[in-house]
Amino acid sequence: MVEIFRSIVENFDWRYVVMWLIGGVLIYLAIKKDMEPTLLLPLGFGTIMVNLPLSGAIGPEGALTTLFNAGIANELFPLILFIGIGAMIDFGPVLANPKLMIFGAAAQFGIFLTFCLASIFFDIPDAASIGIIGAADGPTAIVVAQQLNSTYVGAIMVAAYSYMALVPIIQPPVIKALTTKKERLIRMPYKGKEISKTTRILFPIIITVIAGLVAPSSVALVGFLMFGNLIRECGVLDSLSETAQKVLANLVTIFLGITIATKMNAEEFLQPATLLILGLGLFAFIFDTAGGVLFAKFLNLFLKEKINPMIGAAGISAFPMSGRVVHKMGLKEDPQNFLLMHSIGVNVSGQIASVIAGGLILSFFG
Image 1 (cartoon, rainbow, N blue to C red):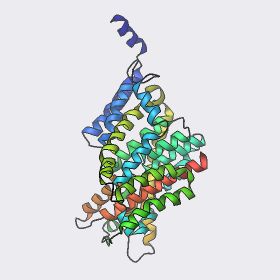
Image 2: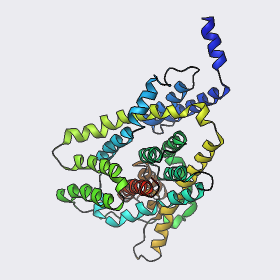
Image 3: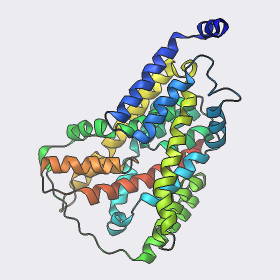
Image 4: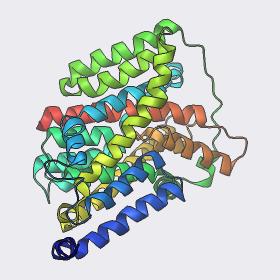
């Protein structure tokens, strides 16, 4: 017993305490604030696990290291998660109003702006990986960072998923700063139309083919997402669709969260570069939000039927949180202004756009 205590004391590092506090904050946000609990709770608990002296959870024989090598080092967990996300997505609002897709593209502006800024401080592969944080798409950020062999995979993963969870806190102030009261009150009646089953089935297939031709490196990312959607829309795999949406997505998210924690050890994480990456990630997130809003305001200069510029902010990939945030902001300004279908349509467009953006980055710098 004395030997064990002595060993713990000899291997103790004050930085462990800092990481325990970080893990505690993540757990607090998950439980008390209900911010992405399926992700932040395992991430926070895993952070504590890997920052214990002589922790058996990491190292060559550690369970978390084994999971990391089996599911993240080869991008398997993020890609499987995309099947579940695809099965959750209803592309009906986009198919009913295809012009919403341009907002998804416009909201990726921050990715490339941040890449340019990050390239001042980091090598190109690291800068490109940091830029993708702005999409608020954790699985894509993991795949890009892993394939580009970034030195800062852990910080990038944590930043991407943290900002996904913080959408309700970060986006509203940005949206309000860029819009007027009059603009936020613009009503957009939903003129949805019935989308045929054939169209719904063909859409994921066509998107995969187009994305594969434009950005071949995005085939796995887009393909798994669209495969999940095809399971949903085909009409003959309802039980598999339900499993993908609930059991598969939740299970992989738990494994993903606790496994990402292997990169949250104090020695790797508590570095000046990590703080800079978190700052650049926030910069990317804010400018992605701003890009969508400003693009909508620009279009309003030429449109007779005005667009509520708030829906442009939903063009980031944080589905469906961002769409719901915009909808709630619309209701707060005017209880009769229902923006949900428009904002969700833009949100699912952002999901596609962020995956394609990740594929383009891999094509350019992979």
